[in-house]
Image (tube, rainbow, N blue to C red):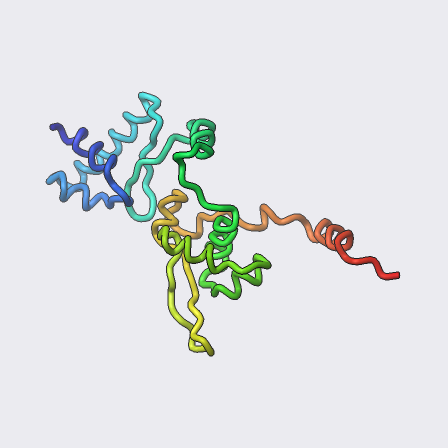
Length: 186
């Protein structure tokens, strides 16, 4: 088997991003040769318009679905065989990602509902983890996202999260919306 085919097989079975140095060690190649091989492999995927792309993320290399495949993956995700996060779990994950480290009570305060079940689900799936316990009554845990979260989101670090300001309406609009929701005083 040639080195390129071996590299492809490794990327196919990898469950996490693989550092270049580890690939060089496994393939028994010098680091510069491995870097060239990775670059050629990524270019080959692009040249043949493959359904996957190779990207560097979370300290290593991993294959991801091609952005143009989004409509097909969206239809697949609604099928019975696809596993998805509930809207509650997605909201909880967003709170942890943007506010970490954060406690369950802080998550519940932000979301306005109990989030214990969602936190447990996200822990079980490996997207969030307990960072530490606070020295307060009850020793509450505080949570942070994991490297798996970065990997699945295709991010190198949390600094690459889109700014929340892009998704928050201007203050005037928020005030108008809040006024329409307040009970009338007569």
